[in-house]
Length: 182
Image 1 (spheres, helix red, strand yellow):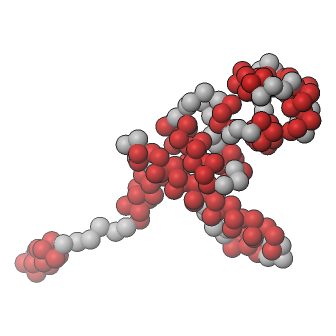
Image 2 (cartoon, helix red, strand yellow; image 1 turned 180 degrees about the horizontal axis):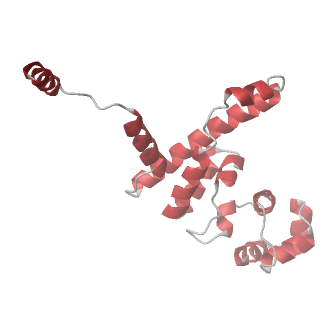
Image 3 (cartoon, one colour; image 1 turned 90 degrees about the horizontal axis):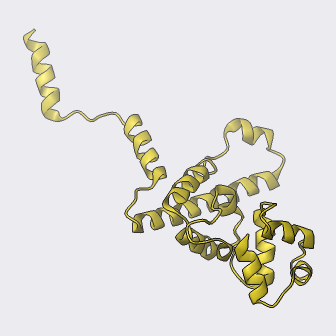
């Protein structure tokens, strides 16, 4: 990861300094910089914090590792909003669809299975709320780009399929008259 090396040297740090400041092993930093290892989101966060930058600064515009997992682990909405701005339209659409699966409430079976574990219920509820909020941020960004949200399109298609077509009063009368004359 060329940007990590660049930012680190611009800060006047060597790999050992960054390792001490971030808590990430020096050999891990070396492997990430050489492209021999893919950095996990948590590792990127530690490195970014130690360098005083945002994770998105490690990636060229449009190449941020945006994903549902990443969206759910970012600490605050503003950080996610910045990453969403730098992500490609395709990444935003894919992330929105991935996040949508986390918005589904637990079913009876899951609730019964976990009934005694309040921590699980709270974690699931928090994840649903965060996922919905992040989808909203993505939808705003996509709207600004003039692109429809895939989540809204899927929801609209589902609602259209589940909503019975309303008969017009005129059509009903015509059908009734047809039956009376027969």
